[in-house]
Length: 619
Image (cartoon, rainbow, N blue to C red; front, side, top):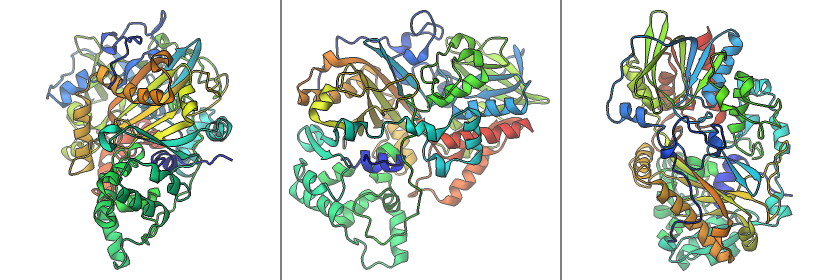
């Protein structure tokens, strides 16, 4: 039987521990910067999921907000309001849509406007579609799965899922757990890069992640020094109490205040090339390298070398990583939009939402009780005697427009609020700025077939110190009419995950900021080349021609990616609780939602905060 993993175990243990060519001329893309807010994305209608090139925080999405946040531009409310609503929601991600849905249930006649600065709804739950040889492939460009729903979802979140007719247990049965390992006999591997390790080297690990059982066979093949191999083998197969001699209290203090990197380097004595191999085992889940992971977090995550330290481990209920739509959590936001604006989204079931048609022209029409307005940036929100006034700018627009409402729910990026809600108390503004988001890049590469991977016998790779830390054939889910590739000759999406956090910085927030600064200097052609160069190495190893196999590419660049999550090396529980309590406070008739105000980047937190804000606003 195939093993099942929780998301944490899957990403940190299975995937992570599993371990220049010229730009293509045959593949042409239209840079998003050349696409206007009203230009059809495909065929004769506006359809953002089919846009390729630069996605995520795409070009144009942050022009106006950056003017306020980075350049100090202030915006004033126009004198005349063009529209009036019962509720305005800022942010059309899972939190904002959940808030709008709950408010509309509590006040069925309410008029609601939802605005978002991106060209598609969903927030980080983005969807990309490729059409390859007549077949439509769907994939996620951000928020990916229902993470541990049995143990971490509140009753309120479960209730919302039921209202959406989303049965996550049933959803799990559509996930093809045994496809890669059992049916296709593919394995995990590590791809070492020339820049760090002296050569490009592929080492097959096995069907399981690197562990005590297979380490003795895999590690001797690593292109690292004999001393590093020796220490790594000990860490994986014969770990000992490296803190022997310390009292239990001293161990706990050391583990909470020492990074896993420093523990491996200074206490274990792992050479630099061994450290390089382990450097990114935490990146894809935690959002930073092992320099920002405490020894305590390493114990929690099951990293090598810490199992015999005698440290207390917080128990958590491990759940299988199977609650996954082909397009990730985009399907959940599509279900929400279907409930809010039924005419815009076809179909009626959880099974048909993946292939359902979305008519974007029907999202923002006067006859809708709920209107969803894309390419629209909120730039000023003021409390008024009988409600709020909001000024916004549409992409390509030249002047601010004003709407009024009884209430507002803000479910966007928290660090912009001090710049657009001037009446927010100073201590709350400071708390809002604490949520420095993690910069990430998801590259999605559409392939006409996966023969190269089958020739090499692999489906998932860990890439230490590379531009991308994880590469894998897309998660296999068959639901409704949608079918994932089940052999080497069918088109498939290759997923590549890059955590753009810098390795250097005195705190995690500084690492995020430094990484974002570097990411924002990279052009789309540079990002595209960087991803395809890595894929090309694999294809060359397999004796396959990438140019003939490549069908398209989308780069989901999230300069402001997932919400900040408490980092044990720098944040205490008391500090986290105090900051989030401040962040959740209403500012008059303006209520705060979004995963940011929870300091948690997960779907369930985004929904919880949206539901809470909706109940506050509806009272």
